[in-house]
Length: 387
Image (cartoon, rainbow, N blue to C red):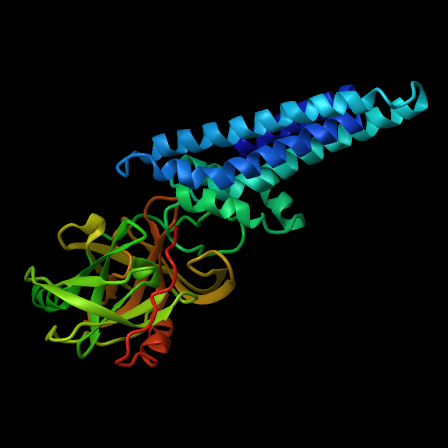
């Protein structure tokens, strides 16, 4: 059990006492009002956040979101209490009120579970202590095994507060400890120069939001990256290592696997060969974190698994072959190539663990090959925006 578990249990105990005093009718109407208030606040939240400065810090964004959601919940609860107190007067004095009080205590505990069910999925995607507490909570994992998925109205809250990566796992689980990333990727300077020449920065605009990620040449005039890097873009720009800017066209887009292939006419860069990785393999990730200069991040493959998660829109359940990495990746490394000392691309970086620094995730080359095989010359839709 962690600190969040203690908070939840304390709230549940207080809610049970309050439910006993208020009675079932008043307790239920108050919780119902709170849930309605939270849902309404979650629906309005994107439009409010959209009016704020784009450079707002994540901590400030979390404060604004929390203030809106908590405020909406408290306002809804106040309305529910008012309605419930009037209905409570209609219950006859005596045994009926005793039953109402007992059931009210149970309703109080269930209400805490429902509020957690609505809010925790967003908390679990916020990098740092929110994700660590949510994913490490024994009480919450037990709750989510019983309750169904939270309603769609909470997805906007998750997309605003989360890290922008697709859900690697469909369960609330803590990220395993893999140890520190290796000090070096073990690549020669000649190999590093070769891979650098075939590494690109991918940029575009979708729904008034600038999106940046990384990519690499995977075929003649073809660049591989993540689907979430180009999602919703009408035009995509590819910047090569010499600083040249090229117009790109998305010719394959798979939101389930989170892989996209971009055709860049006249790119004239050598394609990197594909290979496979096993547990214990080491190498380097070639990416442009934050849209900045090329950076090499050493990696070690901790696990190779089939992960049940969600597509990039958090709508459909999917399975992907995933490499769990000990590597200090950063936002903007999405779409980066994992390169082995033999010079082969053995994975495609696509997510960072929100609850444990130094752990990241990459798609196996089997996932990449499946999308590359269907890439043609015709431009395809890059799907809808992520937010």
